[in-house]
Length: 74
Image (cartoon, rainbow, N blue to C red):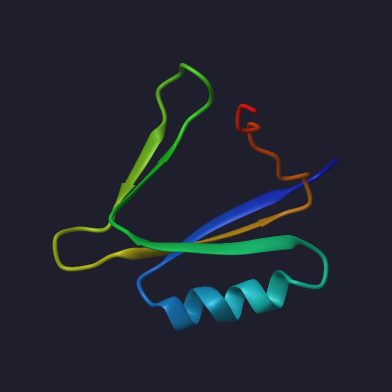
């Protein structure tokens, strides 16, 4: 069974530090700054994290799953 961890931080340095902690065993990335994160499964309602007007999130994703996206046409 694989595992994915998604954490949000107000500080990029904290997100980067956590990414380093996971880097030996997981594929990791830090995304941001962003003010909203939506976690949902297909067409179901999801969970929305909002940072608020005065802040932004830096999202750290660590996964043991393969990361793949759609291929561009051509």
